[in-house]
Amino acid sequence: MARTAGIVVIGDEILSGKFADENAAFLIRELRQLGVDLRRITVIPDELDDIADTVARFAARFDLVFTSGGVGPTHDDVTIAGIAQGFGVAVHRHPELEAKVRGYWGAALADANLRLADVPEGAELVYGSDPTWPVPAFRNIYILPGVPALFRRKFAAIADRFRAAPITIARVFASADEGVLAPSLDAVVAAFADVKLGSYPRFDEREFKVILTLEGHDAARVSAAWAALVERLGALVVKTEAPAAAG
Image 1 (cartoon, rainbow, N blue to C red):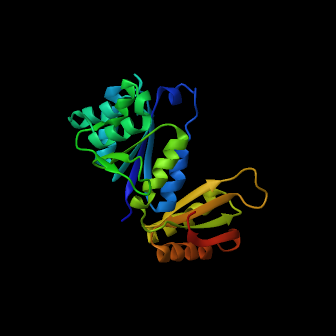
Image 2 (tube, rainbow, N blue to C red):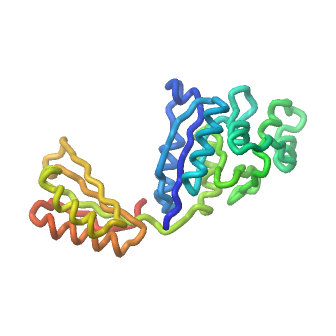
Image 3 (cartoon, rainbow, N blue to C red):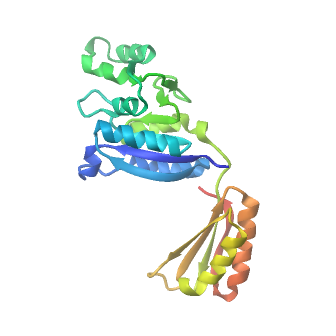
């Protein structure tokens, strides 16, 4: 069974609209290509109690949790403290990270920069392909920065850690309304419960009215469901896209 994931985006600046979130959109694509089933995304403010409650709930519900934002040297960077609070542990200054922070800034080090070495007690450092700056991981929670360029770089360094069986997806383009298609969709869903079947109306297309997608981790089952749907719809099928790995 594929692993599930949740994303917690942390930042007043996202909720206020001062900055548009880029990290969740990036991670949606990456997790799909890795074969991880993303189940939930939430955006919350820089508030200790909210972070503590949300991350703990996500960690209990999903196999993997990725946080974005709230890690840094300023007063509103409270993600580490929030995660620690949510699990009843202390904030710990990791000696390995502290050495890296001191080495990076050298004589220009400000005391506040040492907060970059703080992690929830018991966290591990995950390096992946980056031998310099690791990603702190606490239990099943991976703590990533909010700056989009850093977020992408850090996730890319550890992405192979999450790779699973790829998702296979197929599409069918139909010329009828959803109400006409519904009995056929119900029949395929009943026969292939392990394949996700999605129905998406389109009102600006002349050639077709609905895009139907079938996806799952078992390529053979997706192919069988796709063939069954095409057969049931018959002349209502405008065109198809054969099963292939999602990319």
